[in-house]
Image (cartoon, rainbow, N blue to C red; front, side, top):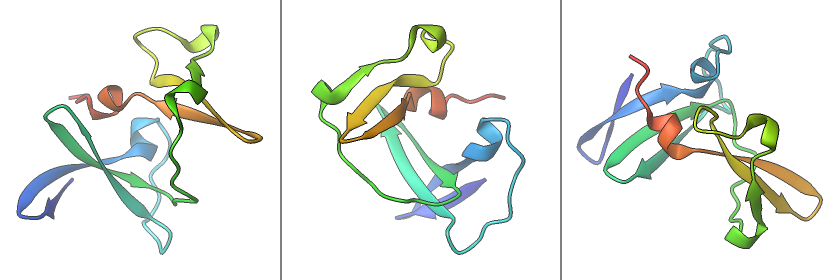
Length: 98
């Protein structure tokens, strides 16, 4: 879909569909995240947002060998305290599949 943000039409991408998951009806916890990569801007529908964090580049490692390469959506793995966080490639998320 498309939504209006400050007078500009922004594409809206449902990440459930992008990852091959069944669509869900939007509820009270549904959120939209807007991302920019270069000149590309899009909004993403997510089921819920538990927290937003910043991770230092020094705390980000490469994607595991089993899923690395140009075809993967995984940029790397972040580490924060006792948590491991999968970091996705924004350029891949913004890639048009049609």
